Length: 159
Length: 168
Image (cartoon, rainbow over all chains, first blue to last red):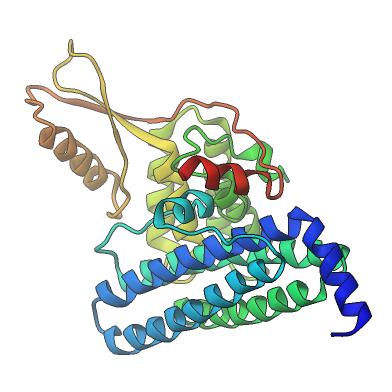
């Protein structure tokens, strides 16, 4: 590890805002994963097969993402938050009440992805301010994934 | 345009958290629809402005709901996401006040907008009251806005650690 990398990570470890931000995005992503999984199970109707498959791809991506975010928190010498009650309380994401229409599942997931996106943007910016480039890079990667999913979900709702 | 923090006075933060409200405030959604070139016709613009005015004044939930249902029938297929956001906002901000008979005390139930006409929404709300064991003799139902309470403005991530500690 180079001296420059060591020093930026050391500085980031002292700034709890980045850790809080990462833990918030972790909670958001976990909550979104659970909601996407629910949509995958309960969606019904003419578009069942493509939506069921798309939702599966999305929650699988989120499953990998939460692991990566939690490991970044650990790399900063902090502890990742966990447990369903804690994650739900931190994420404050509105839960679905199944059954819903296909379009309502998609719209509700869009709203949830937007919440994660907002929090990831703030975390990316704070990581940038503190020169924590690794956390910043991770948030940029997550934002790319969420923006792509948002594009796909919004396209589905267009007539 | 009002900023989200002032235009959306959330009555029940548990159900409509400020974190969610930013992008889904009904007034903001209506403003976005009105600002999108070619998205709405002249008549739809008039009705959207009427709905905006009703939601801002919060004095006639019945009229607001009628306008919303009318607009939803006309526009939802073209603007599904926008109407989903307004629908969710209304569900979080409206209540049905039900008196089982004219002299009875009012009971309040949440409003679910799974139907496209006000009378169907009214019927569903009455059925919800019936499920609670109420006997409806000459029922009266009135839609109202939830009472306004000032919602705290959240700081960036200040709540993460405390929320995690409280949950633990």
